[in-house]
Length: 330
Image (cartoon, rainbow, N blue to C red):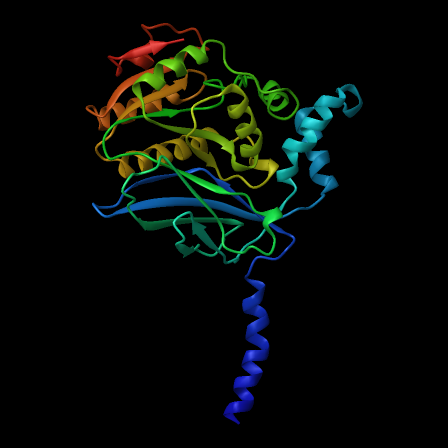
């Protein structure tokens, strides 16, 4: 009787377990994370992934056109192509309860936590290399469908040094966040353009900082378009800390969600690198001065400079900047 029950259990359980593994029509995308010393002999590497199956959802496309408030026949062929590419990741079926492992360049393999709403974040200890590399690469340890899997990347920073934390919209990318319709059109239709003067700021930062972290309320679905833009503009490579939105209803977050995401992302960076100094770079369009001021008050010796794109034309004497002795506007 026990044997019959065991065989019955295996008949039911094995297919269920197999359902948790990645399938050949499912995709894995990694968002660049961070790596730091865990102790004298090991480093800790952060792996951020989301797993999805491609879908074509006409109703979602109609919602997007309504949000953009545009006539589909009035936009150019290039804009239509950009809209198709940038909106594609909003049509996805995010896969929950999926299990997979990642293999690092040193040959070690580590199991990721099961996905929740398609997302999984793992932190893994690796043997510290004799010569630490700034870029740590990894991939899904399942070679049967390599076409669906991108290589992952984490950026290592030494315990001491200077890190730059940068906002994206209206700080390095011209987005016009103060105008909702313009923001949507710039996000989905127009070619991404660098903010005027940011090139000079970034060259100056390259001389001071040895690590870069991009913290933004942009949803993770826009990462491929942002990556292409950053590569084209030759912006400093670094980790991305984007908001985990999964549908168009939450495309533009309310003020509380935006502040919470930025505050939590920056706090994690300060905790991961307790001996490093930080330069904070943002814009005056929304809440960057207030959020950065909190960190300046909390970590007065670690925030060594603040830089803002002054899109509201407030000037150096604005009360929003009173916490920053080392301040630069552009």
